[in-house]
Length: 134
Image: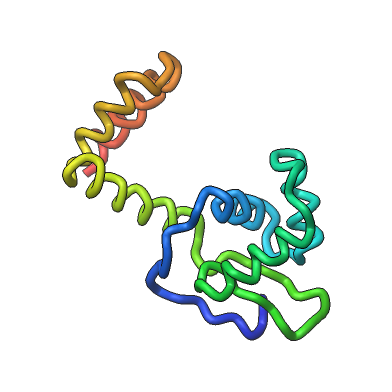
């Protein structure tokens, strides 16, 4: 477990696309130093320099998005919030802003243009399974 970390209950800020890229890397890797994060990011963002990644991690820590273990060198960074919690928060905000608070409208929009036939079948199975539970 990372020492010197302070988990926050509320998600303090909405991550930018670049910040989401770094969070995806850290959720996949677990706690990691800036060099490891940079190397893992390179396949998808080859233009990202080590200095830029380090600075972005520092900014994200200051915003409360990341925890940082300062008890060792190199310092390790880890997401301050679980992936599913952040995703739920982002979706909740998106539904409120883009769909007037209607989850149904979001689902219908997604089903209309962004779901394959295979995904539709999987969704039907999930809905059927959920309907069978009390």
